[in-house]
Length: 459
Image 1 (cartoon, rainbow, N blue to C red):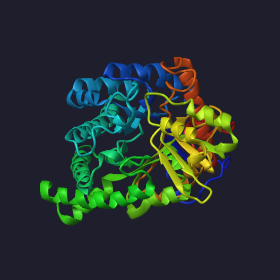
Image 2: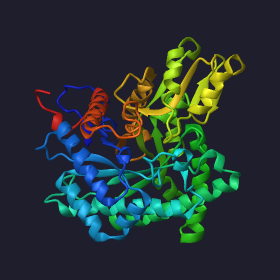
Image 3: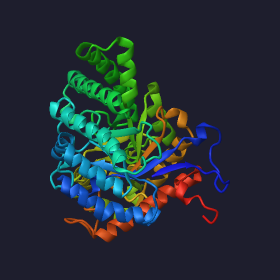
Image 4: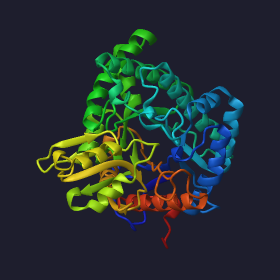
């Protein structure tokens, strides 16, 4: 959904032309186990439409944002079958759903046990990763245009080109990168992806930003590492555009800067103990686009030695599906890193021989509902996400895109206590998503951004 500056004086926010820059909000569909196109359509009907009705009202004509996720086979099918794309576009137009952002990080099997570090496969060295990303980009551009054709009037009220975002990982799982040549090959394929994004913009008018997402233990584990890699990737990608697509030096550099940017995941940033202002500064470094913010929360435990019950609660969250990297910060400000919760269990068992029990704070990569201040017997990093969002909204000049994309990404509903081994009920998930939405909407309103449909005298 589109959030614009409040105009009736009920809420205060940054003023001036920059302060009027819009924010667009969605939730990511990767929390749902949907492998086929039919299953994606069923997810939209079962979860997304009821959520829209709760947030906007069943009679509202306001578009409701959706963060789309397709597994690779479904994306390829949709990209190659105009009839199926038209069918999905008709459904989304009828239900007033706006697919403005896409997640192309997990290739497939995201909600299946045994995933762990395989979520990075294939790496950006692999042609399969390039094909998948290009398929998603083609779907993004064509779906946006097809939805407009399906509507009596365009979704946004005019036929102007849209800005769309696609998130992906920064190259590979860190252990899979053996040398700098691997990173170069990743960047070369990113350059080939940018060539396709430029073609799609020329054909459909929509600007698409491929947004790299840092993650603990990835080839770029934090915002600083990602900023450094983007400098390298844009140079390497620019050379690919020159050599393989006969694009000039200046034009190739401009295309890499236009279409390759950052996805700032608040959970990942918090786990790495980044200051919110530093995360945003690094995202804007070099003038590239802030493709989107993934609004998400991690788990935190201060002074674990003094809280044995909380330590046990954290260790009890181990499960076979997702990676839960842990970062510790010592009293001296040094950082410790572990791959997953079983490794933390081993360190705790070592007792005084390990530096972990005596750390000042642990943070764990476990996406928890973003509206919660504490969860599962632990504190969340919600204030970190709040600070990033508030600062980003007040600094639109740093986005390098016409609007700020914000995607709620809590994909762990199926493994939260009480839901292990199976997903919670449909109603429980919709209720949880509604609570998340209302929390983020309130944070946006504090910065002067509200949905036009909610700006009434009685609100």
